[in-house]
Image 1 (tube, rainbow, N blue to C red):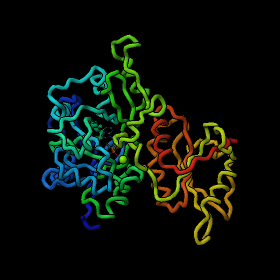
Image 2 (cartoon, helix red, strand yellow; image 1 turned 90 degrees about the vertical axis):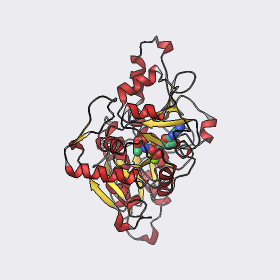
Image 3 (cartoon, rainbow, N blue to C red; image 1 turned 120 degrees about the vertical axis):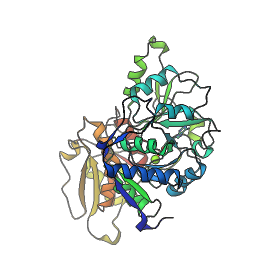
Length: 413
Ligand code: TXA
Ligand code: MG
């Protein structure tokens, strides 16, 4: 393992990288900044010649990449993250020809996959394809018959893959179970300082901020099953399905796991994103404040003030030193802020704004950053405000529910 001092962070200027618009292009992009070009070459060399891991920015979250065609390289991802071996990885490609080389030669894309790729790649959409075990090591697929693939739109990610000349397997660049990293600083704090990697490419904050949407369209019924909601919304997928030249009853349906269907077999098998393992949890407790949904049966319905009183009771401050520090992740126009409980000797609130209530993309982009930032600022407990589950709100609530150990229903007034 690398020592602390050997972690290198190389700055990359994403605006200096340009790809032609066609996905068929399989050459190298133009890179006008010498510093960025050097960083990409150094990183590609680490990945290919040293079979090492490298952290790099994508439009969703930072990835911890390794050569997807090398079992040795892929095994380093699992040890660096402390990731369970039975959780498969997403393979990242930089061009359509690179995707084709990964897939069984007899496999033809379905019309809905062709339309999704045309409309939404490069971007935060991961699709499942049949896996050829002669091409993709079983460590990547965890021995499953499908492989998850996406083409990132972040210029640094796509350029790194192109310069490496091989697809990169990359989970989010965080210790398994922790919130995903959306800034190079998060990667450094979480994996870097612990000596779990040697090189981080810094491309600034990730614009989407939540992971890609994982879609399985391989079923016999031709429908699209959303295994993990993410940066591409269900509304985006439905729009692509509607664009197919098919009568409504023949169009693929977009089915969201848990909302539209359940699958016991899937739930027990860890291929399903985040269903088996604990996820997105900082080392301090997270409480989800349900401000939009009404409580069902036995859940109490509290005022914000009473909710805070119950949190103080549940988390007595160790050493009784000072007020309980509460990190509050709430929208900037949240009804919770209309009548904020007055600070007392018992608690203080550090508000991390999640953008406007009508802008779920910003809330999703800021969620992981918020969890990590208020924790770093010394919070004892984090409160996350519920947002409506439409558009990016679906991915936001999926991550927030997994991060939170407790859920409290609060009145808006
Ligand atoms: O946005 C993203 O997807 C980021 C960036 C780095 O690209 N990557 C990411 O990877 O979130 P990771 O490993 O944290 O999450 C990948 C999810 C896992 O929950 C895994 O279970 C699921 O994708 N997955 C991978 N291969 C699969 C397969 N063959 N079948 C079903 N699920 C699969
Ligand atoms: Mg992850």
